[in-house]
Amino acid sequence: MFYTVIKRVPIFVVPVAILIATWFLIPHIDGLTPAQRELVVISPYLLTALGMFVAVHFHRGRPFMALLLLIVFYWSSSTFLSGEQIEPALSPVYQAFVILIPLNMLLFTIMRERGLFSTAGRLRFIFLAVQAAGAVWLFRYHFTDVIPYIAGGYTGLPLFSGFLVPQPAMVVGAACFTAITLLALRRQAPIESGMLGALVAFFIASNWLINRDIHAAYTAAGALIVTLSILRDSYNMAFRDDLTGIPSRRSLNESLHGLGRNYTVAMLDVDHFKRFNDTYGHDVGDQVLKVVAQKMMGVGGGGRSFRYGGEEFTILFAGCRVEDALPHLEELRKAIADYRMVLRSGDRPKGGKQGRVERGRSAGRTGAQQVSVTVSIGVAESGENLKSTAEVMKAADKALYKAKNKGRNQVSR
Image (cartoon, rainbow, N blue to C red):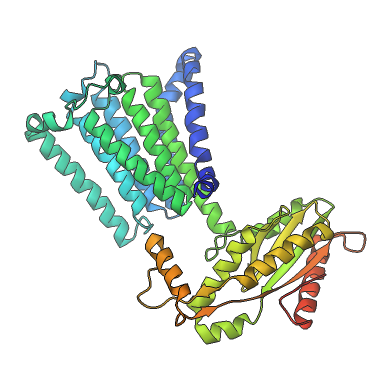
C-alpha cells in the first residue's frame, strides 16, 4: 500500500516545485525597479489570461473556472482589501472567498470534464453566479448574524494564532485539501494535481493578504500551476493511450529518436485476441488489454512499454543487449500467462475495496468463470545489420510472427 502511494506521488512534482520556487523568489522582489514591481502586480492577470486562452483552446472547463475564481479573488482583494489593516472578521468579501473557493476547487476536481461552452459548462457558470448572488445577499443583510460561526476562534492553540485565515475556513480548506489529494493520487491526472497546487497557493495568498508581494506572487503561482496542468493533461491525451494508460504509438515514435546506438526492441501481441473478443465481447477484451498493459509496466531491465495499436504492444530497452532483455521478457510472458481474470457479472462491483473483496470471493467459487490469455513476443537488437530504428522494428515484428508460427506463448528472436 505504501509503495503504491509513493509511486503515485510524482504527479505533485510540478505544483510543489512552483510553490517552492515562488517562496525563494519573493525576497528578490524588493530589489526590483518600480516598473518590474508593477509587472509583479499585474502578473496574476497576465498568467490567468494565458491560462484561460489555453483552457478555451483545449476545451477545459474545470481549470477555466478555477482560474476565474483566482483572478476574481485577486481583483477583489486588491480593490476592496488594499491599503488598510485587514480584520477578517469584519470583511465579508474576505470571508466569502476563503470559504467558497476551496469548496468550489473540490467540486471542480470531483466533476467530470464537460467542456466550456457545452450545456454542462453553461450550467456551471450559472452555478457560480448563483453562489456569488447568495454570498452577496447573506453577507450584506445577515453578516452580523453569521460572524460568530465563520470567524470565531474555536481553539486557542498557538498553531492557529499566526494565521489570518479564520479557523472555520481553515477546517474547510484542510478537508478540501485532503479530498483533492486523495483524488489526485487515485486518478493520476495533471488537472487534479493542478487544482491542489492552486488551492495551496490560494491559501498562502489569503494568509499573507497584507503583504502584497506574497499575495501577488502566490496568486500568479496558482494561475501558472493551473495553466501548466492543462498543457500536461493535453500532452497526456496526445501521447498516452486512453484505454490502457500507457504511452501511445506517438510517444513510441518520439522515443525511437533518442535511443542511441545500442538498444533492444520487443514486439508483443495478445494471442487469439480476435477469437477472444468474439467469444466474450469487447468489454472483456478491453479488460484484457488493460491487464497486459499493467503487467508490461512492471517489466524489468529498464524496459519502457507502449501500446503500438490494437492488441499489439512494444517495449524499448535503451542501452540493453538482447541477451539481457530476454530474461525480463520471459518473466513478463509467464506473468501474463499465469494471470487469471474473473469475468465481471452484472451485479459485480466495478472498483474500490468492495470490488477487490468480491473479486477474491469470486475467484474461490467454482461457478465463477475465469479467463486467461497468453502473449507472443518478438525481439530484435540494433547492430551492424540493423542500423535504423525502422529496420530494428521490422526485425522485431518478424521475430514476433516467428513466435506465433512456433505455437505462440513464447519469446522469439
